Length: 201
Image (cartoon, rainbow, N blue to C red; front, side):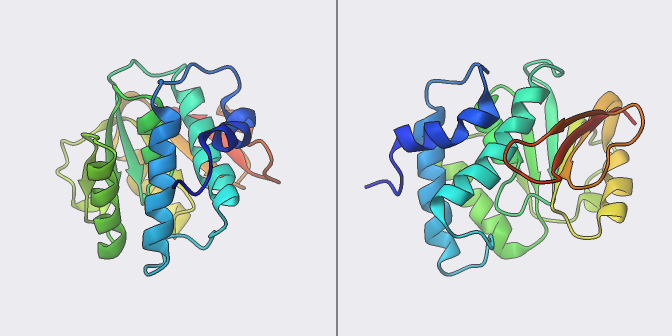
């Protein structure tokens, strides 16, 4: 039996999705993802947030909020690198929201990368998992968008992320940092001081 009914997941996500078009299987897949995350989190510390409704709001909701805004900027089959993906945020929910997007989840910690592979398999996705540092990617691998959320050493990560953005591409951050001049920024619903920032370096 799922941890949360799909109707409850839908209610919790409403502030983040607004009137965005969503794939018909989004809620069933998020429910599967939530159950898998809770099972793994019981033995591997994937996320400090352990309460299911809070996971849906903070992790799924914030990720989908970013995806909703990216959908307005990117062509359907654009490429996205989720830098320091951890348990898959924001990359995996964005992939579920925008199934034609070609997403790579980059995570150098072995246990987290193993979870990401299992999540991709369980959800039936073609999402790529890069189980190494982003800096180890071939120099030719560039992406239409690079996302960062709650990564360690943010300044270093931002510098490395900028090198992975294709011409005309977007750097996307979810953080408490003020938006740089010229960037698009949106307050994240229900989160104090958290901003979604989209900029073209």
